[in-house]
Amino acid sequence: MEKPDILIVEDDESIRTQMKWALVHDYNVFIAADAEKAMEIIGTTHPALVTLDLGLPPDAEGTSVGLDLLYRIVKTDPMTKVVVVSGNAERNSALEAVNEGAHDYFSKPVDIDELKAILKRAYYVHTLETEYRALQSQVESDSFGELVGASPEIQEVFNIVRKVATTDVPVLITGDSGTGKELVARAIHNNSTRRDHPFIPINCGAIPEALMESELFGHEKGSFTGAHVQRRGKVELAHKGTLFFDEIGELPLQLQVKLLRFLQDQKVERIGGRTIIETDVRIIAATNTDIKNQVANEQFREDLYYRLAVVHLELPSLKARGDDVLLLANVFLSRFSDKDSVPMVFSKQAQSAIMEHEWPGNVRELENRIRRAVTFASGTTVTPTDLGFETSGPGMKTLNLKAAKEELEIDLIGIVMEKHNGNISKAAEELGLTRPTLYSLMKKHSIKQ
Ligand SMILES: Nc1ncnc2c1ncn2[C@@H]1O[C@H](COP(=O)(O)OP(=O)(O)OP(=O)(O)O)[C@@H](O)[C@H]1O
Ligand SMILES: [Mg+2]
Image (cartoon, rainbow, N blue to C red):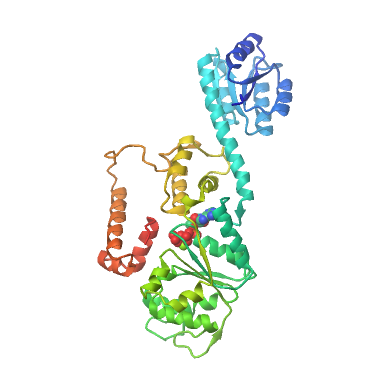
């Protein structure tokens, strides 16, 4: 491996020489005795590391020249890690230097082992930040709107999105929980000529069956108990835009009939209404259930399925997208971390943990873990523990009621859902929950049907 470049800025010749000989084995060493020479070297070689003596001529007894130079280095080369070297009396200035962007400091007399250890850590951070930068620019070239991904699997999805966006054909998006179905639906809308009109999502799993029809088609005042005012349905609201049926597999059979009728002529009639309203709506539907299986079991109408799945887009699991997981991890890390401070990075161990994890909850799980890690991380480097990856063995669980409750929820829902072959209504009944409540719990815990 190539040695990293380091610049030693030190006006005392004997210390300079001592440091040089200590470091020459591991680094390409450059030296400067004053600020001008230092800036000249920085401008041409952009070293990864700089050790900076604060007391430089003409203010060799003070720190003004050193601090000013630090300021210039940080400004020209923000990736360069500056380690400040100070006399014991200058401890406060050293701290001030760290505030101004120095990576670390150590005091004279120079202890070679300590110096080496500090520089090694500084270089490690420099490497992580450089990799992070590279990833950032990769993200820009490998994004499609808000969708991020460089893998051939996801690029293929982008291609289909581009193609179908120019048409009005219905699209059925399938994929496991958290794979980005809604985001893809929005991308289709945003790339279509309908982009200036509404994108209206309707979650078929979260709305109680009794309210579903009115939610979709609207109602007139007084058409049923509780209908105090006239209300337009989502279909009408989506006029000229896109209507997104999320969790379409949860749409009750009776409403499947009504939806099919709507798809045939794009006409709606509010409940209790007498007028027929013409609409122009593009339909996109999504599901994480095995909808073909539902068709086979007569839980989902075959004719409706074919109407919706004119184009079928299957989203790959996150695990199947190779290095995209790291790319996305970095996108979320920069999204959630404080924009004004030093960029946060993943430790090498955290990177491996991210690559190895199975990601059953896909991109949503990744996003949640990173949001959590940003809160938990103590410094700017994210560790596997921050990400919630158990580093302690079994039997080390803490007695946290909230965590225990969540664990119980996850186990119980899993067992009951399996018992009822993924039928949410039946599982909810057994658990004593409403269908929407169970549904949102499953979503929260990334439990698959
Ligand atoms: N390729 C991607 N690039 C960036 N962010 C993504 C990508 N895919 C998904 N996300 C993000 O991950 C989260 C989950 O995505 P989304 O809600 O679209 O998934 P979903 O498949 O609809 O999930 P569910 O089945 O649980 O409803 C969202 O916050 C979304 O912004
Ligand atoms: Mg969704």
